[in-house]
Length: 137
Ligand code: GDP
Picture 1 (cartoon, rainbow, N blue to C red):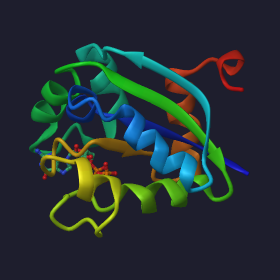
Picture 2: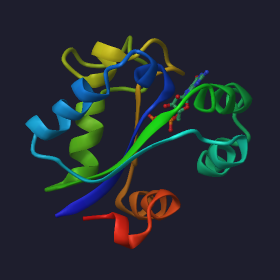
Picture 3: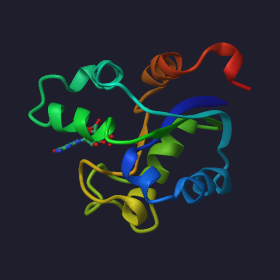
């Protein structure tokens, strides 16, 4: 059993497809162990995306991630980290495999509907960034 962090990003929340995206996880063997809707501050978003600070798109990414509410979740299941990444599809929706969340719901390489932890180690850090132990069930 693994746990991973998923974020339904502002573009997908604005499109009212939270339920459709969660359905992809539940239909494919992942369980929602924790969930909340929140508005990220610029400080939150900058800390969360710290590894991208030197990238040319960093400021745009912070603008985008704070442009509206997000839904953050802990997903739990067998191989949850890899399974979530597989269901999400490639970062750029133009390259995402048909039937993946990004192929179906993303707008662009930036407004790409979902975030998912890319390793078990990052999953643990990202989960702790958003959730207290008592909120994960
Ligand atoms: P992910 O793990 O698939 O989310 O991709 P990355 O960790 O490489 O990038 C983090 C996020 O930054 C992506 O999900 C996008 O929202 C954004 N991003 C990545 N590459 C680009 C880019 O080339 N341009 C812009 N504007 N945003 C990008």
